[in-house]
Image (cartoon, rainbow, N blue to C red):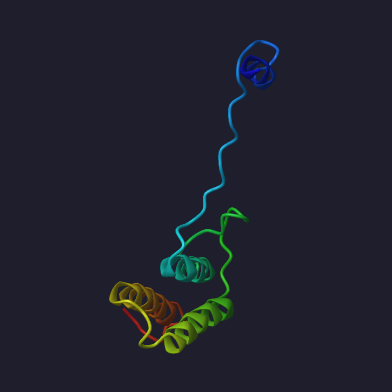
Amino acid sequence: MDEDRDEKAAGADGKFAAEEPREFLPPLDFSSLVYPFYSQALIKLGVLEDPLKGGPAESIDFAKRLIDLLDLLKDRTQGRLKPAEYDFLEAGLTDLKMRYMQKTEILKV
């Protein structure tokens, strides 16, 4: 019986079909919630190219909204995050805010 199953699994040439690659699933942790907002803000600030458009997709207003969303997340999770989670969020927010201020010339370097 196992031979019948093996024969069906193999192609006409007797070789087994290669398995399709599995879709990448990010780890189920706090950084998986923060990172998409962070990376999208970098795209909207013009730091990274938009992978879907294959080029720049700058939008300062959209970048500000994403930064504000991360700030809201920080406020709503205050006191409930592990130190490493808080540090990750804080580092990302600090980086984005500095880049935003440089881009809008609020902060001249």
